Length: 341
Image (cartoon, rainbow, N blue to C red; front, side, top):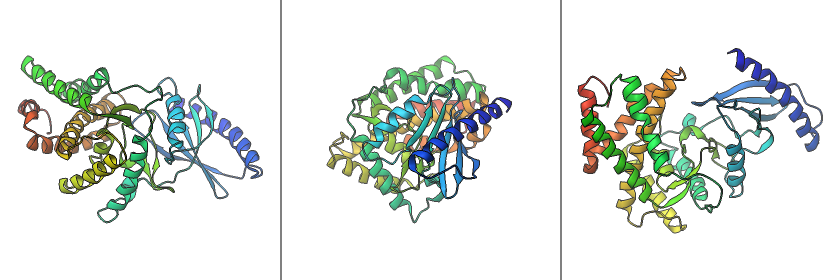
């Protein structure tokens, strides 16, 4: 895209200036010959590039305003670094233009390497970082997962998936079902103890790094339900695990959280119910987001993972009779030739 090409030229000029300053400050000498390659892009407008030269490596974030705002990333990175969580170190920033120069946490995500054999060890590290995250005092000026935010997220499902992807308008009966389901999910989320919530604590945002893991994509952090991040970790967008194994990991987390004074539910069954309902809220939101990314942003590949989220929802419906009305709604959408649930 031409606009991105212009941004990239500006980014390269800025990057050379900043790296020259960093190299001089570190006593590394003049800038060596180097390569700048695309490191990754994500579902937002952000792009990442990797600078490599003479054994040194940096990552550059390009977050174009007004679509993206780097300030929360900078603020929360400082907050998390204080607790020993391995987040990117910020060497230089140009917030008005949306440029950040970061240290390189590696080029392998958890999603790249995790398998049946190493999952226990990798998740042990991920839970250790999450527990540190959740032990932080809630005194930063961050928003809360309140009624408005929870409902705004849920409404992505009827607005973008049902209406735009399926081409279906909810009739009055379906709308009433949806409102009651939404109220139940929101009430459950608000009833939970609060901690700092990453909001996308998933395999693709955890890097194989030292110390492990490196944690990325935390700029949307809020204060909210204690089960949110741990549920997100084990109900991943791109990889699913057997329920029995997930329950074992959840129980390990629940025990450790209680031992460290994190305000999890006192009873494990209550914790599991809260996790299940929190997961359904997130799954519905993500289905809506993936449809929005397709129809608004022209990135249809994310829709391929929508069936995984419907499978997560169906598994919860089978063990949570209080969500029967959601099952009724999804069945009615299927009957109208819609949802792939």
